Structure formats: structure tokens, C-alpha cells
Image (cartoon, rainbow, N blue to C red; front, side, top):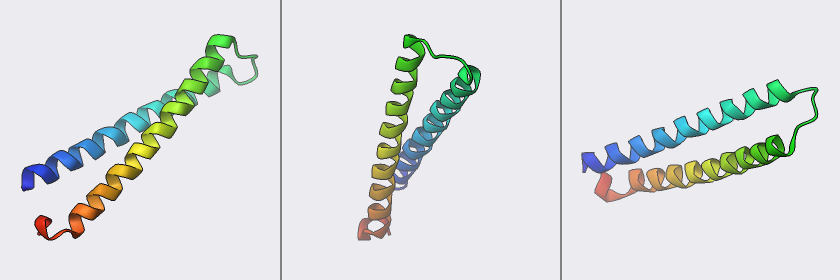
Length: 77
């Protein structure tokens, strides 16, 4: 039982860390290219980073919902 909780929390933490890294990279790219006209490759990269950020946010929301349901279930007690 404790192992399931640990794995769930570990998964949530990993997704949060990856999301934070993706967000930091996206902000770094934005700062470096501010004031310049982005090339096609930079535009595609920014679009992919935005999509990755959206997907990670969706996954975080799902995992948080699952964790909350698990905490409320009688099995977790």
C-alpha cells in the first residue's frame, strides 16, 4: 500500500520537475530571442514547447485528481 503511494507521489514529482524544466527552457528562449525576428526553426520550437507545456499541465491535473481520489478511498486508509 505504501509503495503505491510512493510511486504515485514520485510520478507526480517527476512530472512537476519536467514541467518546470520545460517552462524554464521556454522562458530562456523567449528572453534570448526578444527583439529579434524568430526564424522558422525558433517558431517551431516555441510551438512545440507550448504544446509540451500544455500536455504536462494536463497530465499534472490528471495525476492530482487521481491522487485526491486515492486519498479519499477506504483502501488508502
